[in-house]
Amino acid sequence: MVDIKILKKELKKLTDKYPEKYYPISVFKELNFTRKHCKCGRYFWSKSKDLLCGECEGYQFIGNPVGKKMSFIQVWKEFSKVMQKLGYTPIARYPVVVKGREDIFFVHAAINNFQPQVVKGEVSPPANPLIQVQPCLRFNEISNIGITGRHNTVHMHMEQFTIQPKEKFDQAKYLKDIIIWLTKGVKLPLEEIKFHEDAWGGGGNLGVSIEYFVRGLELGNQVYMTYDVKEDGTYTELRNKVLDMGSGQDRVAWVTSGEPTIYEVDYPKVMDRLRKITGVKLTPLYKNFIKHASILNIDEAADIEKAWQKVAREMNTSAQKLKEEVQKIAALYSVADHSQCLLFALADGALPNKVGGGYNLRLVYRRAYDFIKQYEWDISIPEVCAWHAEELEPQYPELIKAIPNIGTILESEERKYESTLQRIKALVKSLKGKNEKLTNEKLLELYDSQGITPDLLVKEGLIKSIPSDFYIRVAKLHKEKKQKN
Image 1 (cartoon, one colour):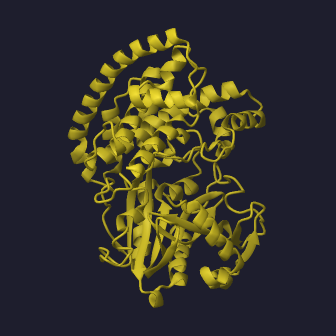
Image 2 (cartoon, rainbow, N blue to C red):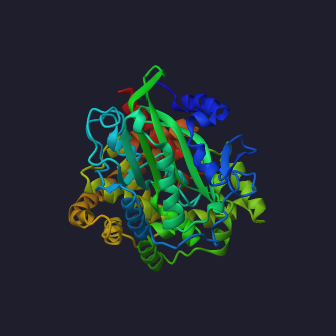
Image 3 (spheres, rainbow, N blue to C red):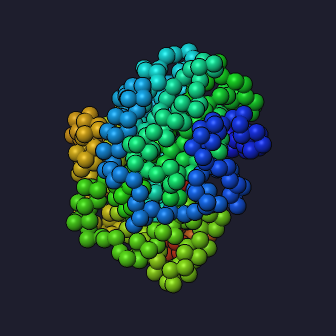
């Protein structure tokens, strides 16, 4: 199967040499932006004298917000108002459960709604150009939740989309439209925005892209989709060109509020309720920690334990003390996040089970349930789902109607898990007697085949700690299984 990362690198080599051929750089020149080369090798455009790209400068907005402060819900309302004046038609979200595709179970990015038929020009989009805000589910970031302060399993993608014949495809206009949104809608000074030259690939397509950052946070990525990628890695030009801009709805709320984590703007009312029940607060140590937490992304850190030690040294504390305090707060964020993920998936017809996407739903349910038991919190996951539905009602009123059915499904899931735990205890006793070395691969096998979590093995003294990337590897395991089938 083709590695899209390799194709992106190959395309970037061309764009680095001939940017004017691929990007609407005339827009940047009109605005007196300058092309710069960051120490990381990335090319970007900005009006500031700073030589660091958006990713390398780190978070500069926490406690130091910029732009017009907006709540999560207000961001979509404002985006919709600005973009409608520019000629875009808002459409309703699609279900998060994907129909008619063999490669994915859930929508990972808003563009999935239009692949492959609309992108290939075989089917017309519901409006052209259009905007929407699409919930997207991603399980490959599960172990980062609460640790980095920015990762979720549920991503709310604000989409700017159009498909046009090549001669009518106007990159400059589409970029100017987003700049109008950023400067007039969000009230961001142009001096605060950095535009990265990049490439994007996914869902069988490839194209160059412009990422835009503010004070170290990526707000969105405007893709100019040009190519149809074949399984052998070759690609041909699409009949029409496609604009696919994805922006995190919560990213805008976060950078304009300066909150310590993204969860505080995603669902503030849910977090308030959870804190009242559990007594878990954002401690001074955690607030200081989150400024350093970007290097703890498990997907990117070469050695996650060394990364923890580095952060601890910078904070003048021990890695053990830091982990204990951070992981409890991260656990509460995970309960909130996982409950919202279950809300959307179950409302749209998915069910927790042993295969595919259902397996990942069972994974997030049981992970949240384990956290609740571990810390002895008086929390009901169905109730947290209902709180999310209430908070999201202005944007997604349909979720409220699904709550009774979701409660029934999750109550059944709890009974199944409690029954499984009784069987697991007997299996763990037999493992103690064998004195077998439990490698990471063995831990995956035990979880996948028997449902034995590493948390339980830690309690029983069979392993010292939970591998940091364990749940990410579990999620990837079942993604790979579907691809092989």
